[in-house]
Image 1: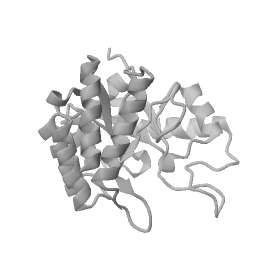
Image 2: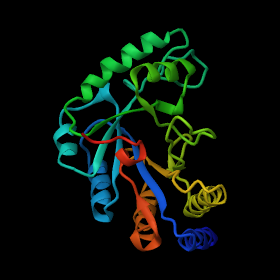
Image 3: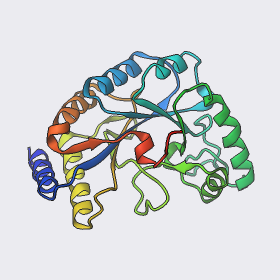
Length: 246
C-alpha cells in the first residue's frame, strides 16, 4: 500500500532527525455508556493511547461519569451545549444563533460546563459541534479562558485541532479508507518536518457512535503501527493543551 510506504518513510525521516512524532486522539459526541464506548476504551487501554473524550453536557447520562472516572488515561472536553443547531434554516449547522452576543454565548457555555463538574479529569477546552468556529464563540471562549479544539485549521496559533478524521460524512458516515488516511498523515508530518514544527501534534479524530467495522479495524492497525518502536509519542490532553496539573 502506497500510503503505508510513504508513512514509513516519513517516520524514518523523523527518527533520523532525532525527533519523536507528537500525536493525540480526540473522540466526539460522547453522552452515555454504550457497547461502542466500551470498545473505544478497550482500544485505548490495549494500545496505551491517551484519549480526549468530547462530551455533550446537556445530553450527559449520569452513567457515563463513573465509567470515565475509572479510566485514568481519559480526559473530558466540553462538546458544545446540546449539539442542536440554532442557525438560520438553510445555513450550515452551528451551536449558537447569529443573533447571540458573545456575552450570551459565554453564559450558556459556563452554565453547561457545570454539568461536567463530576468528571475527575475535565479540561478547560471547548470543542464546537460541526466544527462551527463562529467569531462570537471565539470571543466568548477568550472571556472564559477556555481553549478551543476544532478541525484542521490553517492557523492553529490559539487552538489545537484534530486533523485526521477516520470517517467520511454524507448520508451515512463510513470509513474514509486506509490509503487516504495514511497518505494524509504522511503529508502532515512532512509539512511539520520541513518547517521544523516538531512540537505541533497531529490529532486523530473518531466518533465511536458512528463508526463502521472497517474504521474500527483500521484504528487497531494504526495504533499498532504507531507504537513506541515507530518513534511516535501519543500525548495526553494535558500535554497537548499545555495544562499544568496542580
